[in-house]
Amino acid sequence: MLKKFIMAFVILASCGTLFANMGDKAEAASYNYHIRAIQVAENHMGVPYRWGGMSPYGFDCSGLVKYSYGKAGRTLNRTAATMYYGNGYHVSSLKTGDLMFFAPSKASRPTHVAIYIGYGKMIMASSSKGVMITKTSNPYWHARYIGAKRV
Image (cartoon, rainbow, N blue to C red; front, side):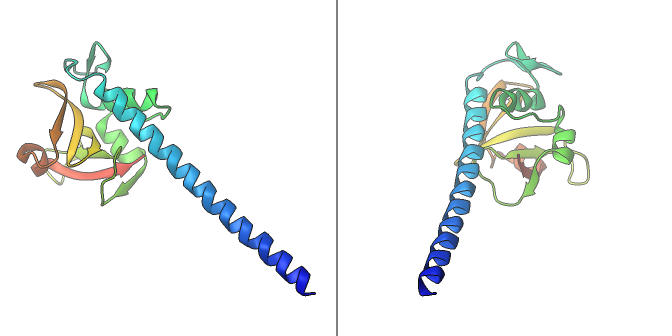
């Protein structure tokens, strides 16, 4: 009887470890596509802004995000607003790869999206400078920040 109890305990304990490791692997895979999307975006630094652009010939903000995540294996909606309302889940604490959303006012729908790259920085397609990295504390963007999502 004691042997059966010990064997059952060992089996249950190993199942818990197995499921815990599966979660770690899923989290690692998630982290990998975030890193890949950032790498894709960084490889296009300086590409000019093009309204409606979704290619290395020119990007708008959501085009850059959609393109970068697409190359990393994730399909996102096309516009900042449809990403905000349709992709991922809202988060209050930023992690590398999270999408940051901006709007003209707190009450309006998102009109701009960027990818958080860590260390208080984000990569985005700017209408004035094309694909660039800027600080999340930039006064212009900080005042327009309305939230973040993890995809």
